[in-house]
Amino acid sequence: MRVIAGTLGGRAISMKDKLPVRPTSDKARGAVFSSLAPLIVGSNFLDIFAGTGAMGIEAISRGAHHVTAIELSPQVAMLIKDNLGALGISNDVYEVRVGSFRDVLPRLTAKKYDLIFADPPYGQGYPEEVLRLVLQHDLLKAEGIMVIEHFVKENVPPAHGKLRLFKTKNYGQTKMSFFVAEREC
Image (tube, rainbow, N blue to C red; front, side, top):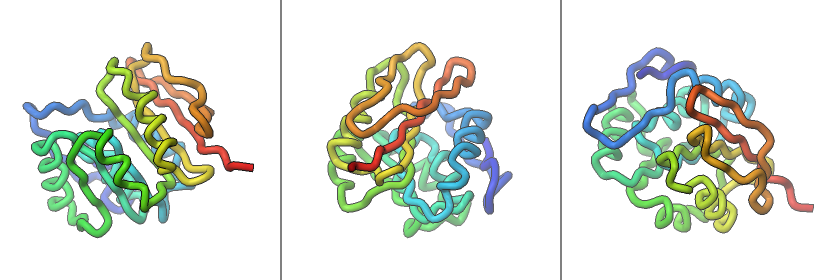
């Protein structure tokens, strides 16, 4: 797996076979970032269910100001930190939080994010719960974008509070659902 574009384009992102991760495919990752291109530079990016850290690394490579990654597994979080070290990405710009998204999201309320990406385990019903928690803790800036990666046959609500689904893209068995945080009147 490699960083697709930006200052780190072409550099390797390590994987370890026995770790419980399902990385976003290069094709899907590239398409998501192409869709988000005008919003990435200078953004605060939140990666929920971070896995290898590839989405956050791609965001940094393309000019994001700061990434916060949430990863449940301490072993997988170490993989992210190893990847960051190998790529020369400092803890000042990429912060890894180890724990359940249910526990970590409520502790992030001091910061609002321009972009949020969530890639929960498929078929567990997590997309709706993640939407609810992001909304409940007001983590997404007005007009910010949230992308949820999920199994193509898994239902994701078209709206949740001020979060509105505005686009979906399919990549084989994977679907990306794009939400925008509507500005309050």
